Length: 290
Length: 260
Ligand SMILES: Nc1ncnc2c1ncn2[C@@H]1O[C@H](COP(=O)(O)OP(=O)(O)OP(=O)(O)O)[C@@H](O)[C@H]1O
Ligand SMILES: Nc1ncnc2c1ncn2[C@@H]1O[C@H](COP(=O)(O)OP(=O)(O)OP(=O)(O)O)[C@@H](O)[C@H]1O
Ligand SMILES: [Mg+2]
Ligand SMILES: [Mg+2]
Image (cartoon, rainbow over all chains, first blue to last red; front, top):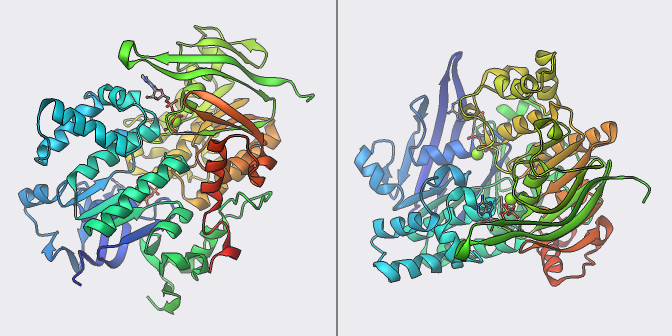
């Protein structure tokens, strides 16, 4: 099966006052119709990878790759017009912060209706209204009629996140990059949202990149996981084997989790080792040098 | 209980909107938090948790009921000084920082507003406390990762040396290692300075780590209170709470012994 997305030696650096600062250093992976998790500490480059794929980085970013293709199309060589067509239609990204991506001066329901229209799935009048309500209900919004008329600042954190997810559901993309899509949701609502995503992958053959800090979530939900450290993939592993990861950085992340059943006084924190920057990496349990 | 209550919330109600769009975001909520205690609020998304916190720090001025902070009743139109001792860390690390302020300006501003000196030193100390290099002072929020921004937000709350910290999902934007550092930091600050915490989180393991008592909210109401021991044991009174606990303890990594 041809991969949906191929990323080969992706490099991103941000130009700053004191020269370039690398944010992504030689990341390679391919994605089929599956659920790929990307985890790693804050600042390790997770969102930057997502934005690089969608070409959403600012001009101060220098992006290079030996290969960056979506269904065989070279993403780096795409015209602005072809890019716009791809974004939001075939590839969509749920941004880490929902309130940043919702229009603050438009009622949430109107924004969803507009998205429906753009994708030619709208209908008009009552029909369109009903569709929006159905979508809000699908993401577990309790009182969809009120939320339809609410402005983004009138929603709770988790409601905003769900409105974003609702909009992305409409686009029916072939590749979805979800950056911390459930971080503001309680566990029961989260379960429902994840099952919607799972459905899209298994039934409609969507590819999913799930960026998250939540190791439990990624272990239980994804197929495969990339663990990112300082812009580099230091470990790739099947999600179900995440508990048996090998890289000391990965192990350190696991060790720092609080556990409901096992109280501890002080949580373990990472002791970073300079050798992780360029040292050996692990693939599916085996050490490979680079 | 011998400790005196630091926070008393009695029959608190907050309504938004009118007519068909009206919503009882908080609907008759009562609880008390003792001085030096760490109290957790968990529950459904949209159940009113952030709204309760916003009332307590003066951001939500339309409310009914009685609220007492450190023995003083919360007035409906409080003066700014009233909240010197109560600081909030917001759920959303993006919206809570001014995009055109450097980190230095963000951290110095509350000091300036309240006429507090030694600003440089205090800014340094606050950054250090949250594990950020002092060089970050000259950056703008968009030049930071999500987790780095949240650390700045915590530093800003700490800078006035408050007695009560209202923490709205303080670590949900952080990676687990920084989360561990922040949770250890919060535990240490509470021990050393006798701080009182009111913590909102969706992560029951985080709540259990930091809090001794937990309240569960659903649809604007406080449906049950339980001790951390009960939470860990999974002995809860309502189906909703049991469901929350079940969903959290089924987690794969949390139980390495049971996974294959
Ligand atoms: N526009 C920018 N200008 C300069 N540096 C940037 C910019 N955007 C990101 N960076 C830097 O690039 C690095 C990677 O950031 P990125 O946002 O990808 O991290 P992340 O892994 O998504 O972190 P988090 O989990 O905290 O969201 C960080 O060190 C960040 O400070
Ligand atoms: N300014 C506002 N105007 C109108 N309604 C509001 C406003 N702020 C909050 N609400 C409503 O109040 C209810 C409670 O919101 P709140 O933010 O307190 O929930 P929460 O428990 O913090 O949820 P989450 O876990 O998703 O953050 C929601 O239904 C929300 O739509
Ligand atoms: Mg990010
Ligand atoms: Mg909230």
